[in-house]
Length: 91
Image (cartoon, rainbow, N blue to C red):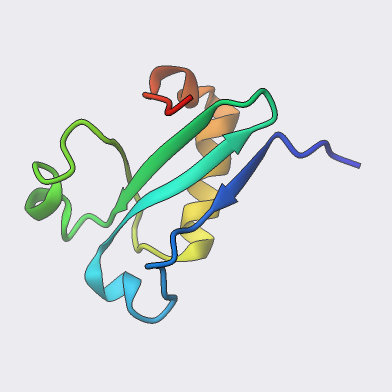
């Protein structure tokens, strides 16, 4: 059995039908077992240029489409690559 290393919390503003059309989702929280918390903002390629400056200074992750499956997959890939060590954490 695998040990869960982190917990993902999607914000209340997330809706599976509306969010992909909007093209972004901010305040996705990743909480690690060691107590570190990261807030991530997800953008799709179509909205990258429109919103990049709006979300400047945040941990931005590009995904093909902003869906819960893509968010979970991207976070897992970031974790496996050790990318969280390069991101700004909340705590």
